[in-house]
Image 1: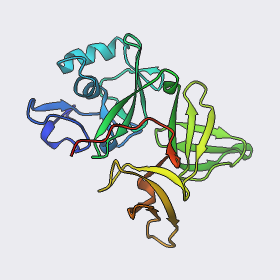
Image 2: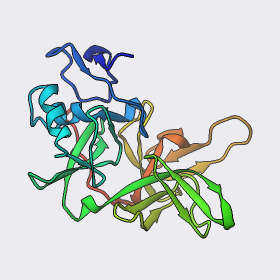
Image 3: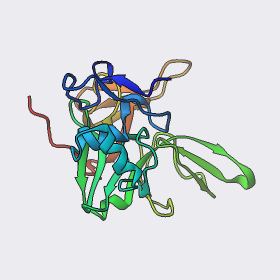
Image 4: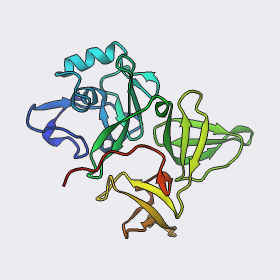
Length: 236
């Protein structure tokens, strides 16, 4: 299987200059889909712009100089996706991976305090032994709880050290949410209504500005106001 892809065929969400080079590293399978993440080498070279070639990016990552969610990167092909926290100890810089209002992946610089936690969407949950509940989150992590406290679609504020849940944001009217997939990707708006449909039809979320999308495309980021620092608005 090829370890590279042509820049011209890379996902539209990747913030790339398409014609300056032919190839870009192809990410390995991981917790994030290809449209919502970029390989570590591409993040280092094309987003952070701290090196000029993929070879240099590989060396930096191989030296464990880049952390994702507090853990050293081990592969230049690892996907770095939505809400992941990227830290570079040598420069004391921290970033959160988000989407711009144009649907492009972007690294937003955050403080050291903000880099200690992230928002994780609850994709599903399962009952396990002794009546405990396992939460399965959007970034591949699992958290086991004694009580069934959260609903699928809610977003949890998770402390990266110890995986402690320090807060939650329900998918409900009044919540501020980001659409992370589909034609409105990158848009943020306040939820006005959550419509549950019977049968095979997808559940729908409507927003106060009239936008509508399927429930799976919605990521809550706060109640009325954002709990995270968002990218600056793109130029028209």
